[in-house]
Image (cartoon, rainbow, N blue to C red; front, side):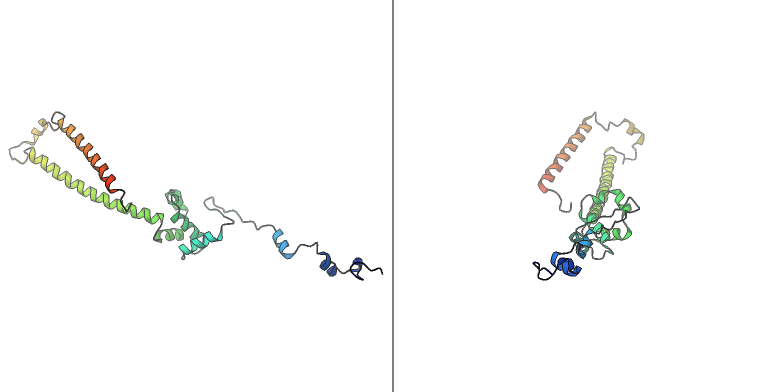
Length: 202
């Protein structure tokens, strides 16, 4: 038997294992075979209100989980994180209908979020409006009483019917005075805003 470059071994007489050890194998390795497997298909959701996402960076999920440790799953954590820290999302009225009960609770209970910030600002506005309404009613009563007194209606001899002849506009001069006061009030408000700046709680 002629001797070849591999000693007495004749390639035609080599076993499959020996041939593979020397020349390599044409069969894919387990790792290569695993990579060649077709990716598992994710079924699309039945509803057009939810979506299935692939290749979401793990770090995003971890951050959301740290911010919302009580979330029952990754989806709830990520949804709550987006709603709380992405401006404009909670302004979408239709979004509230798509959130689950657990997601709404995570958003509502979070100490710092666009939802709680909006709720706090609305509460502050309500308190200010209630105060302004109360002050307006007081000023209205004082003004009407002053007018009632100056018109002489406190006198028992004064007939209410005679009010029809009272010129409340004072030939237009009173209206001019009101317009001047409105302009002065706007100018004063602008000066105070420029001096004090934006309120800290808004």
